[in-house]
Image (cartoon, rainbow, N blue to C red; front, side, top):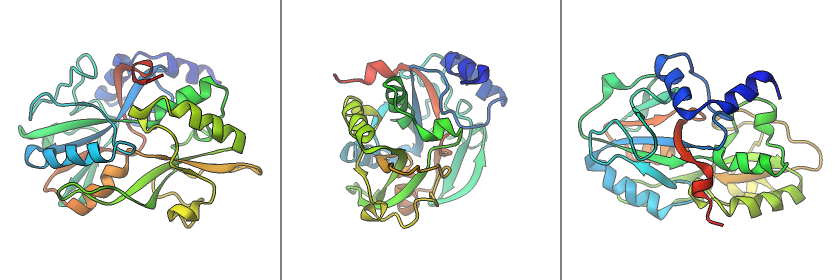
Length: 268
């Protein structure tokens, strides 16, 4: 591990958010602020938020809620961290209008509305830390790239206008390590829990493992199997179909770094 990687891991969440807010940090947040929860972001008008909340409650594996706005229009999120400003504290945002991405920006103050509700969803970066602590290699961290993510044929349960299929993230492992990963991740239902599948990608509708729909491809070595977890990019697929007039999400891999500790989310 390089000196830079160690320094990034040791940075306090508030320090990372300050760098992001200032525009100095615009890349993915994998590996930063060791021990702290990172969150996927979905921001919707209040008139759409109740159905989205139901969608998350009905699909807790890909959409585990770890925080949300106290009131519509609130851009500060004290439930997940001190001085968290959701308009500026994510490295990159996607802006959707009527289900289509119209912009990718580092600041959403210009598009903020007083009826917007923010959802913070658990992120796989939290369980990656638990896997690394147990001695398991996480290939996207080793290769210093964003985790590969794929659309699948696994249907979500619908709620109002929200429906679609599950997006998964993938990490290659030896079979014995995959079994250990299942045991570890079962302790973290708030950050996607145990894997959904491992083995043949075609079984869940993935035609080419080397061509992820989001993120970057990683090396799969001889004797390894791809292991798939439900992913917080799933809401973006549901949003494409629901077509709300406005929605804002994080860009894949560019998370909100919170003050919540990963240990707070463990159930065992």
